[in-house]
Length: 142
Picture (cartoon, helix red, strand yellow):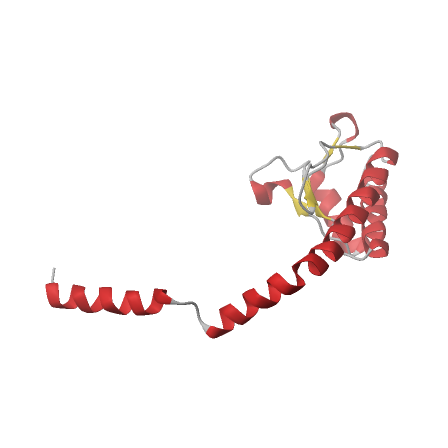
């Protein structure tokens, strides 16, 4: 409501938004220079990860999914006819196999769904985690 204060704020905003910070500009320049190399490595890692998960889903009869068409995470679910008590499954997975997935309820989804990231872990870590999920499913199936 104060015209003088409003004018001072507008002037300050103009000065702040006129240019980016020198650090932001340096980071942007580096990203433009290195982008193809960075994206190439990231793409290879994601492609390897989705292949590993795809092969696991094909072998794991308790799991079904809709394969993601992009990104570095998937959201498989435990098939209804093979579904254990999911609270027990998540506990066994964490306590016996030192493996954590994002339970569905974290994402306002049913607890038999889980979020698995495949873009960050090394291939052997991802395979070990998927093996742990299978083992926890087997251990809690009864």
